[in-house]
Amino acid sequence: MPLFLSAVVLVAFIVESAAGFGATVVTVTLGAQLLPLDTVLAAFLPVNVLLSLVLTVQNARAIDRGLLFRKVIPWMGLGTAVGLAFARYRSAEWIKIVFAGFVIVLSLGELIALRARSDERAAPLRPPVAAVALSTAGVIHGLFACGGPLVVYVVGRSLHDKAAFRATLSALWLVMNVVLVATMAFDGSVGAKSLLTSAWLVPPLLLGLFLGDRLHRRLDERSFRVAVFVLLLVAASVLLVRSLVK
Image 1 (tube, rainbow, N blue to C red):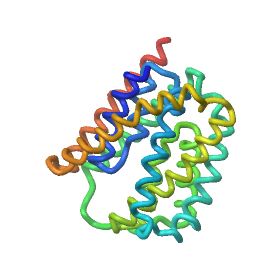
Image 2 (cartoon, one colour):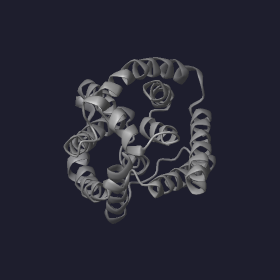
Image 3 (tube, rainbow, N blue to C red):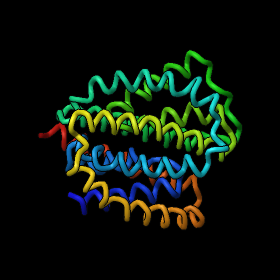
Image 4 (cartoon, helix red, strand yellow):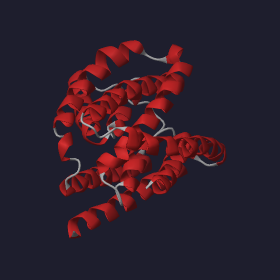
């Protein structure tokens, strides 16, 4: 298992470093092909917390604290609590079907958006719409630790400065994933065995960040994002078929 997860995490953090998003959704989508979601999350989330901590400390001055603490965390925290209430079902086979469906819809939506997207800056969402989107992201995050796409959509329409955008999201993932890790430690999902696997994932994380940075400098970002979402679409479709035919 550690070697398989190490390979998955390497791919995930190459994607994260090159495109600025996607480590968790890539890890969970690929990892769930052979492993239970709980097992993947228990090993991966502590490593992801470490990454978020480093990025948050490095970019603390750029964090938009008003947006983070007044608008994002309250609504996402509410949704996360709901998601955690259903987290005991992560090991059920139907949860993989739900997750695969979510990733398929996400990937198709992003591919369509990438095809139609212009360079014009979108206006911030109206508060009620943002609240619903962030609450939904929280539910998804509580279940799969993959609420990022909806959060990116909301925050990206409010923060157009790249440094503030990355720093604010890093701080958000630090807070949200510390809560998830603490909850999983309390219920026994995170323990000595899973943390040993997490330690295996640190070297591929570092290598993935290094390779992804080099890839970022050489490849067109839009083409790379298309490739990532095609990869996710294929992987999620395979996961859906495997789950349905069992």
